[in-house]
Length: 98
Image (cartoon, rainbow, N blue to C red; front, side, top):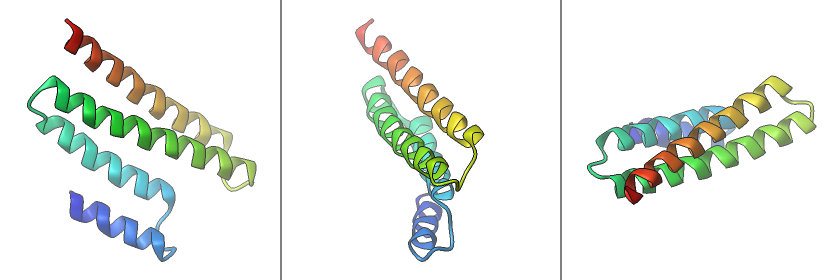
C-alpha cells in the first residue's frame, strides 16, 4: 500500500496525478495502518494523521474552488471527509479516557 502511495506522490510531482489522488492514496495507507493498530493509543496517533491530511485536502479543495478549478460539491465532500476523521478521533480519545 505504501508503495502505491509513493508512486502516486511521484506522479503528482510530475503533474500526472491530482492532489485528490494523492489524498486518496495516503488515506488508504492510513486506513490500512488503522486496521492493524493494536491499541487505542496507536489508533489515536493514526487518526491524528488522518485529521491533518483531511484538513490539508479540504483547504486545497477550497483553494481550487476559489480558482474555478473544482465544484462546491467537491468542497463539501472534502469537509465531510474531515468531519468524519475528526469524529473518529474523538471517539478513539473517548475510549482512552474510559
